[in-house]
Length: 262
Image (cartoon, rainbow, N blue to C red; front, side, top):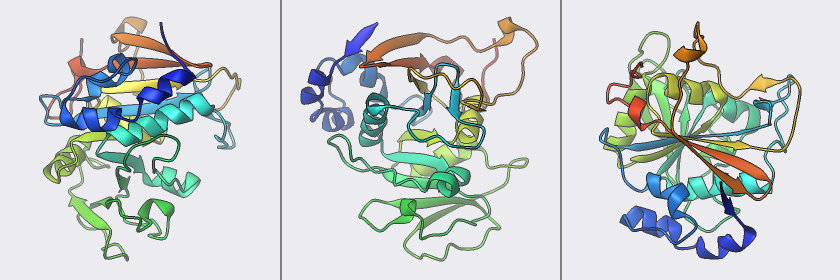
């Protein structure tokens, strides 16, 4: 298990630029962030991120999630934001947490901020849509009303079943130059992209905390047998007092967004 120490942060400042330039990263960052450097054959590089307790919870039953991730986990999340072109969240996360989705804890540029809001019901006064110089986009269904704020980019996509196809979302972002994408939350959104075969990597940051009950970090379709579960190559990193699992999902990634089955 590779350990990332506080001292390692001194070498971080060049990482966002080097990833975008396709260059090898300074140590100790190459092993962890190097896989995000190049886009996949699908035309994009998509990483999901989860911050959870030891027992797999991202919030209490009441929905309280503040402080599950410690400073190490939050620093890692902000590093991920700084190396991607766009960060994506669902409308439920915007309503529950009103996140800023900016880079504040480490050096690096702010990504474009994307909300998946099929019916265009979000208040454009939410912090994700703050006019701070970063691109702001809303993914909606074609029949949804136009967002009230004219400077928020709208991407209108057709309905696939009851939701919007994750592959169509990624294709639309890629067509707008947003090819390195972070799916940050919430768990339903991350699960939807994972089940559709639309993640190249999944970063699971585990904090030294046991809740005993609460909301699970993932909610995927059930399997009948353990052998039917998704077993993937994984690297572990000790990030101060938290453990990061970097899961390689590239073998399950397909252009059409349908996960490969073993």
